[in-house]
Amino acid sequence: MCANDYVLGTHEEEIERLGLQHRIWRPLMLNAWMKAGLTVGSRVVDFGAGPGYAALDAAEIVGVRGEVTAIERSPDFLDFARRQFERRQIPWGRFVQADLDTQTDADELQSEFRSLEKDTDAIMVTPLVVEIIAEKI
Ligand SMILES: C[S@@+](CC[C@H](N)C(=O)[O-])C[C@H]1O[C@@H](n2cnc3c(N)ncnc32)[C@H](O)[C@@H]1O
Image 1: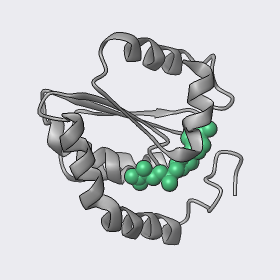
Image 2 (image 1 turned 180 degrees about the horizontal axis):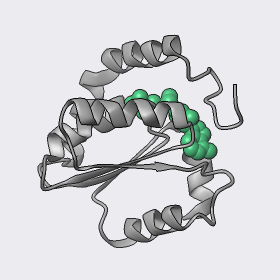
Image 3 (image 1 turned 120 degrees about the horizontal axis):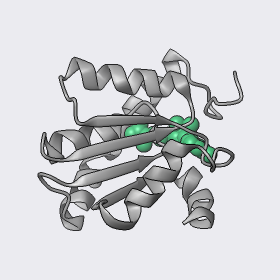
Image 4 (image 1 turned 90 degrees about the vertical axis):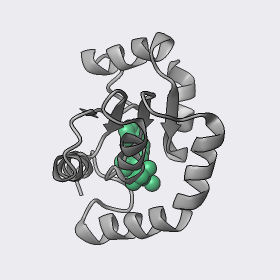
């Protein structure tokens, strides 16, 4: 496991496990998004996007006029996410490889934080990174 890996690993079995977990809580997630007003054209930033299951669902909702930015520290997860977007022919996904714990000076990450101030309609945060983000913004 490299320094950028998820604590449970980023191997195929873990990607499958996260997919199963995603399918279990997906109805609750979609309901919460609907209540929050996530819709066509929304701009979403997903911090700790993992293999991108939630990001992909969000991208299908926001459509071509919206945008989903997936921020994730594991290159393996981010590659998997990127491939899923390509497979579904969704070019309105953006992928930023960054460790929110350490890479606060990365230009791309700085610009994500700046865009949060004005352009973002929804922020999805994995529980593990909530604390880190709270310190940064
Ligand atoms: C439970 S997974 C997220 C699953 C994802 N929401 C999905 O739909 O598949 C948690 C993710 O947070 C990422 N993460 C944890 N701490 C992070 C940090 N400091 N910076 C960036 N990503 C982080 C992990 O690498 C992992 O991929």
